[in-house]
Length: 339
Picture: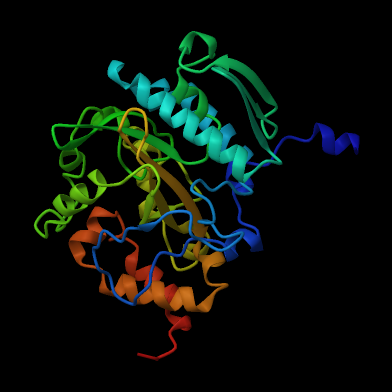
């Protein structure tokens, strides 16, 4: 290796998350129609074509190592991005097992899991880790089970307890949320933590969604899309760091909109946890700049039409109102005039 390259500082984190042509091609573009409609939009998980973002339950991509390094940095600065109530230890082991099993089966070139009764050996070659531990005994891991495995798995991970006919947000690791806070929502019921979402409560969306989620079985996980926009290739847009990124919304101009504004898509995967009977809520986030997105003109055209149809209260909730028209104008050349 060239000695100058070996000693050169790593590129800025935002540069490390720039998408290759492959990442753009497999981006989970969320819109199936030309107008905005609030729906639950649940489909079965892991049904995608080979190489697609939804080929497996839990997707990993070219940003894996950069995302894990950024997660470690966020947790170092704010350890409360991981929280778990005392009764959630069985859920934690459920999540650890689910991630290890699926990563080892779906990405055997990077991960392996060997079991000898309760004595398990986990190897993560991407991060250079190899640990042997006793399943069910947290003293044999360096951290609590969910804390340990979520530091090695792309996306945010929330474990929901099921009791009294409701879903309770009682454990999770949340380092890349879209303007919400694990610390604030910890211990809330399903409808309580969705309280700020406009229009959906009146339409009964969350009551129907909860009833559906309570019927999910371990054999058949489901997934749904959620989307918003983010200024800058910024992953951590938590409520705790609003002072660092909120001001960015005022900086969008016709000259920089293509580079700075990103479509932010969450693929939310929801499997039932077999031992604890809880529900796992994985939030796998993908970012694509408008400059990257318009390399697919059909996506540009559709996004423009969806933004034009977005109700003002939804645009406000998503934080888009200040620059929505600037984005629409940027995408205008891709309008094909077809119905």
